[in-house]
Amino acid sequence: MLQLQSPSERPSSPHPILNLSFRIFFTGGGIFAIITMLLWVFVFMGKTNIDAVTINPFYWHSHEMLYGYTLAIIAGFLLTAVKTWTGMMMPYGYRLLGIFSCWAVARVGWVLVGLGVGNPLLWLAMAAIADLAFMSWTALVITKAVLAVKQYKQMGIITKLTLLTLGNALCYWGIYSGDPDFVRIGIYLGLYLIIAIVLTIGRRVVPFFIERGISFDGSEKVQVKNSKALDVLSLVMFLVFMLVDIFYPNKYLLTVSAAGVALVNSVRLLGWYHHGIWQKPLLWSLFLAFVGMCISFVLFAVQPWLGFSHSLAVHALTISGVGMMTVAMMSRVSLGHTGRSIHQPPKMVVPILLLMVCVFIFRVLLPLVAMDYYTVWLMIAQTAWILCFTLFCITYVPILAAPRPDKLFG
Image 1 (tube, one colour):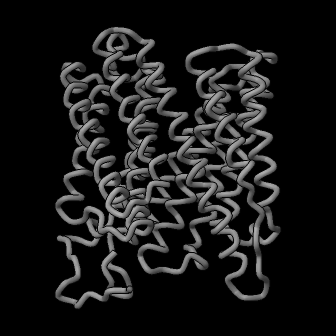
Image 2 (spheres, rainbow, N blue to C red):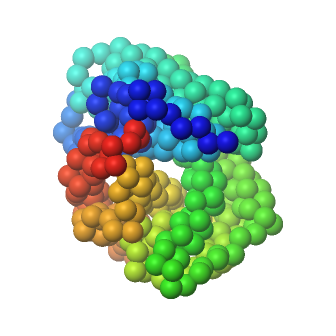
């Protein structure tokens, strides 16, 4: 039975940006995506005093892209989505600010490490405490809501969040113990768990969005194809791929498992395809994110035999599965959950999404065919990333910080 609240019983927060988690985490994540990439440009060029003995600069960059930027977006999305899934109210107001502040303090610590200011071990200790508090708090809130309504099908998401917390802890342990293997495992475990979450959430929402988006005007009723068998195959093949690439680098198993993930998800995409998506940027961007992930797994499959850098396949996966997917989801969620039309997105959405496509082209595809110009491609890709999120923040932060037009809480 639907229970209506009187206006006096409605929740309230000190500012609209603290109404629901997607508002503050998408804002913070978008701004941090600019800051951390700008700083990475200087770190990569050797223009900062980062202590490479304490932390490998490449691991510094990887950690903040995954456990910094990406987890902010995941937290913002899940803490909002779980409210819809379970009907349970999620943190808002000062409680939400507390969770976000833990994330923000950790990011400040890692930025100071990147700049080479003061004692890096001190900043990393501060970051470790704040980071693990943020992740544990987020996982606890989601777990309590899921268990309260006995929605046990969501336990897979909770398990992945718990393992992500473990992966982050391994990174910190590796730094303090001086064992880079722990840092490496923590980084790759984080990446593949994030991709697992993307594949899980994407399987739920992308076909739904395509059906709703194409059928919106009533001219055509669209129903895309899904398969439980493909879902199971994708999960099994990806699990094998993840374990092989992190713990047992066997090129035969890597090729078979990566090719299997690429094939299964390509078949899945064929079932989701409808020509109408190209008229709607919030649909083709999600579709292209999955296409990019399929290309990434093909690169993983052929890399041991063609000899190009493993890093290219990794960046293909992160740019498509993290970069494009998060920007596309944020662009949609920020409209829908603030009471705005997802069918009439801001005009700036197309340039935002195309810039992320450019990141993929210049960071992954062009180095494959013209490695002699690698540094040029890298700098163009970094510039496109920064421009993408600058436009996102200019376009969406005013929306995220403003009350809903319909005056509802959310």
